[in-house]
Length: 87
Image (tube, rainbow, N blue to C red; front, side, top):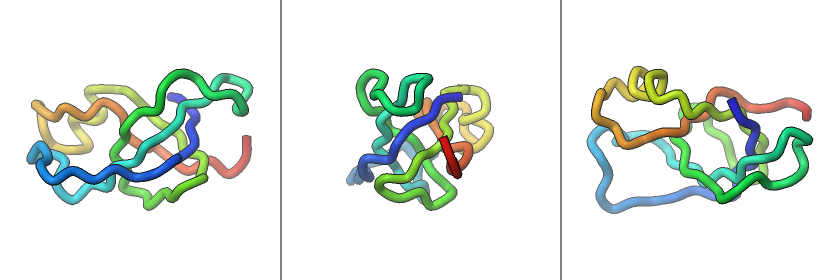
């Protein structure tokens, strides 16, 4: 699991079938201290309705994401697990 801040959303005119109906977020991962950026932003699927500026808890668990999207061939790696109340 990793903490991140939503910096925006992404749109795609063509999506893998497993991504239909899912919101795509651009999320800046955060370092362990919760303040500093940790690498480049990632794309994550979201079913919780997170918005710009919100802190989210992400997972890169491929098996969990494949199960969530009900697809063994999905290209998605990151998904939102929860919204962080406090850091």
